[in-house]
Image (tube, helix red, strand yellow):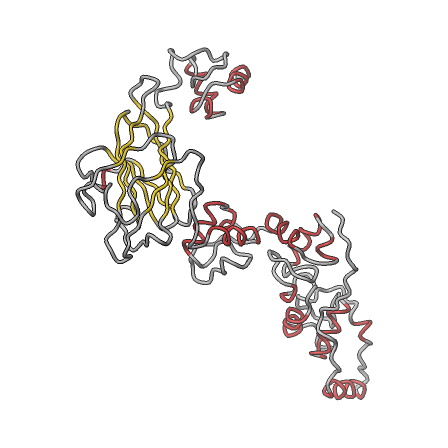
Length: 417
């Protein structure tokens, strides 16, 4: 990596202040006792860290040492480098590795180094620029994976802002934090770094819209109408028909936000293309408001307690339910705002009302390891193979072979067993 920059001069450090008269008095007293301290140049070549307490005066940075001793002369006296000296170093020694004044390791700043000496060492092993010239965005990015932070919990007291980097995982806004960590789990498992902040700024916005797939369909019901709610909140509507594998864009909202919840219901036909009578189904759901979708059997006003699958989303983050094998046939998909299984209202048609829903189906419900399956040593679209023991061993090594298809990799694994 090549960057052109002037060598760092510590010019951002607080200017050295003239020692107050108390220092003159202290020097006079030491001279009277025959204990004249050495010159600062001798003291400030101590090998000890400026941000750690030690019994000897001075520390290992001439600039930081002189700055601290101009504030507190005892740090260069016989009393040693105590907690007050460390506190002053943290406050005034911008650019010193490990000093609080050097800034967060997970955010760019104009001085070199950051507030963790260990992180400085890890980052600068990749890019020495970060410790010699400036801790820029590249340095902050490197810190995100080279300097793991402490896991955190979304919305917990004391969690940092979602919009500024910090060494602990998670942030203080529950819904925003959940959305970011759904995209990048490391933001909750490690430090909330600059990348997490960028994601938050992208998704944690009340104006977000779900990503629309090419060829997506749109809900027939207009926002504010109640034409596809058969019986849940505004009885009398009829469920719309939707297609498997085709994204549907819908709205949840009322013309008056204080009105009753908008519930959308859809009918979907799950096919049985392999003739086993079953279909493996899952739901992909994304929503600007806090909302949920559920798959239910087709029966009059099927209660939410009968839901076969459910998934929730907020802030336009894609969420996918578990997959489940069910008898092929017709099912009901219900979408509502709020927290499942409650129907939530208060969503304005003109503001944050959009969602997307896709019903995904695959034909992988029968036993893939059976005598009726194909040879374990021939690649083909079907799942599993006819040698039950061999099939089980291969699929333990690569579940794809039993979930999706028996390809050349599955054959290679079988050949090595």
